[in-house]
Length: 257
Image (tube, rainbow, N blue to C red; front, side):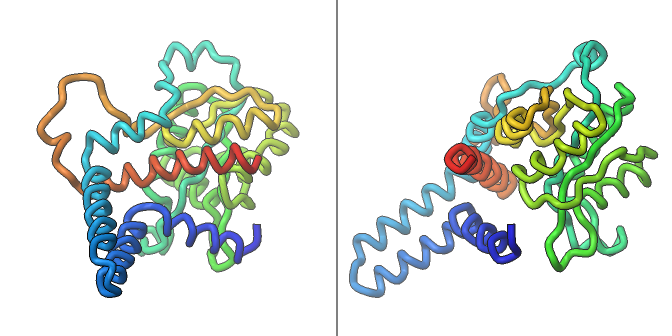
């Protein structure tokens, strides 16, 4: 994937997901009202406001997340009985404004995956592969950042680093040959719970047996509803955005690959 293609993909993705999509819709509403199409403009503005409110509710964001969280948590008993040969941790972005960590560190999504991958390694003793590339302007790849965290903060040195991938498809495409060369046929695939529904088929189609190892669950929890489930907040909007991103990604991958 070229730099321009990657940039264009990121722009298009931002334009159809919250919060930018609502900014664009409100701007369209303003233009329509200013241009004399008051009724249509008001309808678009009202619909955008209602949709923004709904996506900011914990109840709605949890329901959206549940649509992609297909796999449950692994138990210690399952881990000990499994015939898995390696642990693969998928990158989930970096945080560039991190002077306290030398300028760059892992994003929150990536940190959660790294932490759970380290836990699985402690329990099973299996070797780790970290996967995630970088843009042309970045100094370090996601894989290098994850390796540094694992080494410095957990005392774990990954066996493999895949540093060329730019998306989930390439995570699989570039990692699987490295694993097969090492004789690995069955893996734990570590990523956020919503991401696994998109990631697992990509690794399986390339010939690996995959045991999903989800972390960072955001779906609805069984039990009585709480008053806070109906109070909008920015965290819930972020969860809704990620859930919509994953749902759209699954459709895109199904059509393209």
